[in-house]
Amino acid sequence: MPKPFRDELLRDNEENMAIFRSKNFPCLEICGRQHLQGIYESLRDLPEFSKDRQLIAIGYLSDAVEFTADSQGRFVIPSKLLDGLGTTDEVLFAGIGSTFQAWVPERYENQLPEAESEISERQLADKMLPPGSFSGHGGTG
Image (cartoon, rainbow, N blue to C red; front, side, top):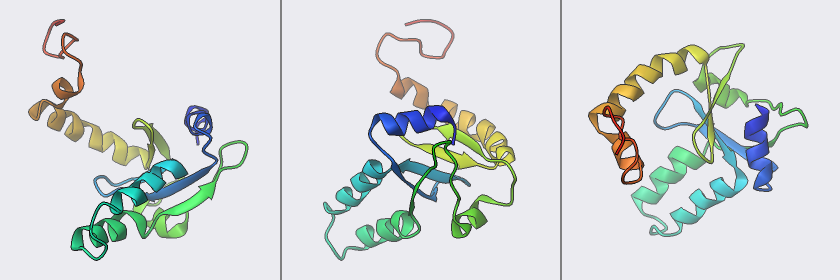
């Protein structure tokens, strides 16, 4: 795991991390224990035996594995998750805010054009920028 990602988690006093399959992309999601705990807590807002609660629990939490990286940031990706990532000797880490993802480099490179296209089509960048900032449409605001 790259040092900047480790530092971010350690800054938040996160030594224990969790890894699980992404539900949106062909990669693995990695987050601190506190983030995972937030997902658990959000489930409490749903009725205990509701289908929505059970789908989220099965989809996000059933394959989550907690781990601690060594002092150099190394950790073992469990085989049940590695199968979903694909066979590779290399892993690319991509930061996405307070969490990050582990990708097979080729899959990540193949996903970028599709993501950029969807951002443009749905004008997602404009929704994320504060009013008056650069909008990405050829000028400053």
